[in-house]
Image (cartoon, rainbow, N blue to C red; front, side, top):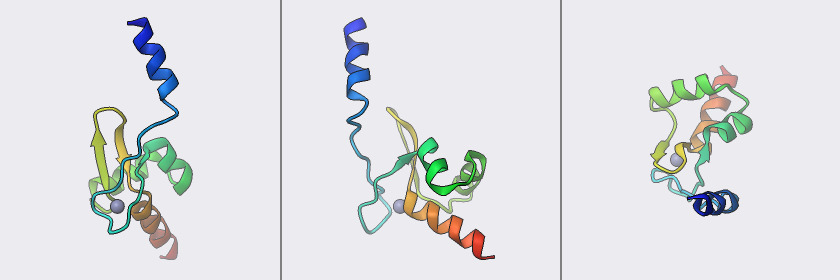
Length: 82
Ligand SMILES: [Zn+2]
């Protein structure tokens, strides 16, 4: 069991990229904290966009919620224009 945990920690830097299924181009999905950092909006605002289905998002058993940064940034820029 302990050995397994070490492997997980060492391997965590080499996370396999997950690409957005809905984008025409390959867009690497990002975790929620990364999405907060690149968009500058709070995690609650991001969840609101997910609920309204305005951004692409997928859920993985290993990494939880993953967000499509392409659609996220599009929504952020749209809100700033208004
Ligand atoms: Zn997408």
